[in-house]
Every structure is written in C-alpha cells, then in structure tokens.
Length: 533
Image (cartoon, rainbow, N blue to C red; front, side, top):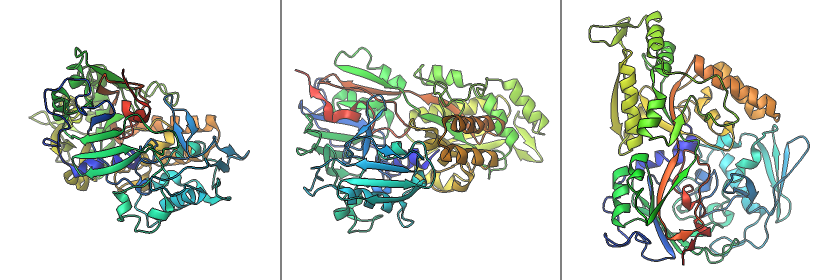
C-alpha cells in the first residue's frame, strides 16, 4: 500500500471515531429528498475516513479536488487535465525538463489576500523540504527547482524527463502569508486552512464531521450548494442506517448495503470505476510470509473471481497487481488462475508438509500468521475471511483480527494486513511507493517490506523515461516480477458505490483512486450541483 493512498484515507482512521451519535442535521423519519440537510442549498454526506491534516503541505488533497484549495491544474469528469489556478496547460520544453505555467490573475484566497506565483513556489519548496512531514514527497522527486517569473508565471525545472509531471501539479496551493509564518507540521494551518477553492472550512469536529460553506468570491463562480457537511462514519452499517433514517443525504456504501436502496425512488446509486484494490501484505520479516514459496502458493490458492461475485456482488474485477486488467498499462499474461492443487505442489516442493491437523510445517515452523483488517470495514473483513478460507484449503492457517490503525501500524513489519491502494493517473503514482525497497518501513509505504532489485530497477526506469514504449516495458517487468515473487496477494479491484438523495442535478463520478471520500464520489463536483426544481 502506498503512503499516498493510505496516509490520507485509511491512516486517517487512526482518529477512529464512529459517528454513532454525531449531530444529525434533521430528525429521523424525514423524507428521502433533502433529508439530511433539510434544505435544497445544503447537503450532508457520509464518508468513512477523515484526513489527519487539511494542509496540502502535509499531503492533503495532493491528487486534486480538495474543495478548500485549487491546484495549478485539475481533472475533469473524464480525468483529463484542465486549467485551474493556471490559465492554460503548461508549456513543456522539447527536452521535457522545463514546465512553464501562466497563472490566473485576480484570484484571492478565502481571507481576501491575493494569490500569486510566490505561493506556488512556497508550496512546492516547502513540501520538498526535509523538515516537512509529507510522506508523499517522493512523488516530486523529479523537481530540481521551481521559480517565479513575476507575479503570474511559474517555471519548474526537472532533474529528468518525468512523463506524468503535469498530473502532479493538481496539488493544492497553500498561501505563503499564512502557512509560511508557522510551523509547517504542527501549526494551526493544518486544521484551519485558507485556500482559493470553492468551499471554506467552517468547523472540523474530529471524528464527527467537517463543515463547509460556499466561497462567495470563488473565481470559478459561487456554488449553489451553500452548506456542505461531511459526516465521518467509520462503520459501513451505521452509515447505511443514518442514510436510511434521514440523517444523511448521501453516503459511500459497500455493494450489499448499496443494493438495499435499489427500490428507493427517492435516491440514486452512482457507481464509480476505480483503481482501488484490496491486497494482503506478506511481510518479508515474518518466517512464514517471508518465504517466496508461501507467497507464490497463496497467489494461486486465492479465488479472486468468487470474491468479486460474492463479496463485491459483481461491482469490481479480479486483481493481479496494482494495475487493473482493463488498463492499457496492464501486462497481459500476468493473470493467475485459481489453482489450489498448484498451490499445494509449490508448498510440497518447498518443504512445507501437511501436519496431522492439516496445517503445514517446515523445519518446525507452522504455516500460520495473523492477518489484520480495519475494524468496521465490512469489505476488508469479508476479503480477509475469504482469503483465510482459501489459504486453509492448501494447509496455511491465517488468524484474522480486527483493529484500528493505532493497533495495526506498529505490527506491519511482521504481520499481514488487508490493505488498499491504487491511483489512476499514472503507474508511477502507486507502484513506486508500494514496491520500492528503499521505502520499506516509511510509514505506509511498501508495507510488505518488499525487496526485489529487478523491480527497483524497473520502477526507476519507468519514472525517469520520457518514452511511452520504455515506460510500458518497465511496468510490464514489474508485473511479471510480481508473478515470480509476489510480496502481496492482490485480490480485487473495487467499483465504489454511492447512494445519494435525488435532489440535485449535475451529479457524476470520476475514475477514482483508493483515497476516496472527501475528494471523490458524486460530490467531486458539488460546487456544480444545482437543486432540482
């Protein structure tokens, strides 16, 4: 799992609070349409996790669409880059080493102060500063320098021709006049942000909700939804209940719960295609999961298709790595069939022999290990239980355990975790932090402590090449190596399902990353919603 995808979304669950008694915005029993907010210009939605910080300098909103902030560029409904704080797409030099952005004039931060080139320089230089606790700073490794040319032009110079650099510039811009005058890691800006975006944070009740109001001076036009609230409801069942009783106008739900709203004429279900995967980390520091033979056996013992059909109820696809099978970056031929007999043969040949109780042993070591999943996350629980069931059939005993991230994180070096990740913009965005050996132990980067020199070399080639063919070959190598030496068992790619009251026009979904909630779902463009007449 990557720092990018987990640190903001799942690690945020370390705040860990269920919103069981979170202040409801209307009384239970109100009608479905507009129930949560009670007004056509307001909306209340349920999300599973909250961020650790609202500062883009620490990673918040780095993949764009943060509501409070804007990047130089943004992504439209088709995931195409479009201008935001930049007035047009960047001009790129012939050697791919210089990106020049012309900035939008007349833009102001929510405190009324003007936005300018110095804020862009400040943002990128601060993120790259070694003293800044931004777990995703390796994403900007290609940046050699960033400089302002006057108030309305910014020039980035790269160390190497990093092909997806423009996609990195959806990163939100922070105001130097606020964030630059306090401790970047602990200052009030981390919870009281000031940005140029369509919404302004009015209150953040940790573990309960984030409340926003429309920015009346937004350069893109004042939103019609004037008040927007994100209720933090960790438990899937509780989120569904609060939607059903009228506390929420919309929520993200797992397939089985989303299905229960299918006959509700007052609500609509939105399915978002995603790169979001579920995977099992197989730490190299554990005496069982550190054995390549065990990892290879588990890779073919698992029944991915049944997980898609039964757990996801068809809302997803089997996963054989971080790249979905329908992506142009997917390496065809790396699919693994469900083959328990092949798994048994791998284990037999490696010296893992079945004991009297059916559990295999080797040199006195039982083939058993713990598998942690996040409390309250039904999808992770169901994946973990199915994985353990498949493993048991080939002689591997997996003990599933639920816990918060406070409990799980200290154990990640040796214990397996039912994790998630995925980013749609470019294969470098997810694979580098997921698999690079030098990032093992760096927060939620490379959770399995995977160490494969051929993969390291290919990841660097994919990152540093400007040629599509060379990059395709590099990421094909990565996927082929994961067949020979899987540090993770990838299970499924998940379509995200959202149920929303049918009270507004303009709702749609994007192709989503693992990190979903604040920036994704049908509210990715809530600033463009219009009340139905």
